[in-house]
Each structure stands twice: as C-alpha cells, then as structure tokens.
Amino acid sequence: MSKSIYWNFLQCEDAALAELNGEYRRFQDETPLLVGNYLHSFFESEESHQQFLDDHKKEIFKYGNPEKGMKKAFVDADKMINTLKDDPYFDAIYQGDKEVIVAGTIDGIKWKGKLDCLVLDRGLFLDLKTTQDLHKKYWNAQEHTYQNFAEIHGYILQMAIYQELVKQQFGKKIAPFIIAVSKQDIPDKGIYSIPQELMDDEMNKLIKKQDHIKNVIDGKEKPEACGRCAWCRSKKELTNIIPIDWLKIG
Image (cartoon, rainbow, N blue to C red; front, side, top):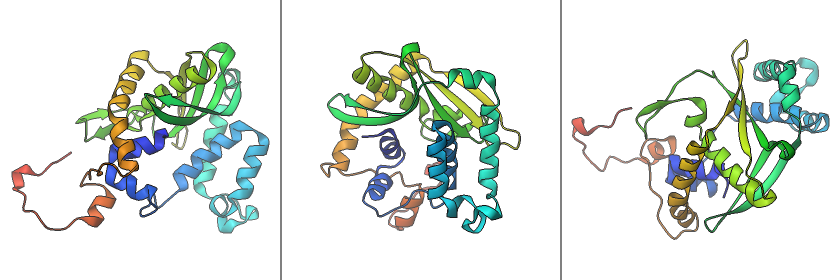
C-alpha cells in the first residue's frame, strides 16, 4: 500500500479501483504532477534533473524542442525552484539523503514510501510540496469544513505513514517537516512542522480503514461509489427519484 493509493480510495473506492484496473484515469492533464517531479528532480541531483529533462522533452519544451524554450508551466516551476534555491536557510536545512525508499508493515499490511530528504543524524525528514497558494482555503465536502493545503491533500497522513516506516526501518522516531512553495507569479514559501497528535489521529484512522480498502483491492469486498466524482458521474443512470430537499450540497 502507498499513501497515494490509500488516499484515492478515501476519495472514492469505485474510482480508485477502476484506476488500479486501468479502466479510468483520474487526471487527464499530468502537467501538475510533472511540475512537481521537475522540482523534486532539481533538488535531488544534477544528474536526476538532466535525466528528467531528457525523458520529458515533449511535455516540458515547446514542440518538444529545447531550442524553442520551455512551456509556461515549467517556466513557472523554475521560479519556484529559484525561490527555494536562493534562500540560504533552505540550503542549510535541505541537506541529507535524497529520495530514500522506506517500507514496513502497519497493522499487518505492507506499506512503502519515498522520502524527499532524510536527515537521520538530526532526527528529521523533509518533504517538498508545491501548491497554488499557501493561504488558500479548500472546502472538504466529506468533513464539511474548510482546510489548508496540507489537510485537503492528505499530507499530514502521509507524514504519519512515513514517520512510522522510518521508525521501523531505522529504529528512530523522527520529526517530519513540509517545505511548501506556491505556484503564484511571485512564489510564496514556508516550512511547516506537524504536531504529533495530528499524525497520531491520522494513523488511528488509517488502522481502522485500511483492512476494508485492502479487501476491496483484493476483490473480497465491494467498493463504495461516492456518486459525485468524474468516474461516478460517467456511470450514473436515472434509476432513482430523489426529493429535492435531500439533494446534498457542498
């Protein structure tokens, strides 16, 4: 299990299973994902970044030709990179082992993840995130509340999982930090700690839910459909009449 797979199932089990089976693509436009990977590769190593450029010329450069210049999304990505690179405090803290694979077992189920930067001797690990705006509020329809970028995308859950896997693999419980940079014309940036009680709460929820999700993946239980995502909308049929005052909003 990985955080991304688990998180997809929390959003809609039916869509997540369809995606695992190759029947559905959640994101038709992969540019945001590529922008994030572009930034990560830069801070991993020069070799990794060059390899990423070579592997994704079509997506990064106009007409797939480096001589024509980069597409706007990656010009903006360079702004984000420079915002971090030119900050002496970032350079001082982002020193450690890059792209470290961690694996372990959480309550009987195998998990794996990848740390952006592990600084084991200082008792911490760092995760780079890109987001639209550090201060933007997002409506969570399931929880009926507004959340920040880390909450809405499950980053606190991700850090809880990684903390546990690091503990199992290296024998140390260390602290995660999120370094976030915005996609604004003049990028914003911040470094954020995650209170342990928030991670403990996410881990408790995971332990309660993961068995069902694993059973759905293994075909032992049926997936639940959210009824609202793109996958569910594409499969919807007019089989039920719903009283208008029962219509869910938000």
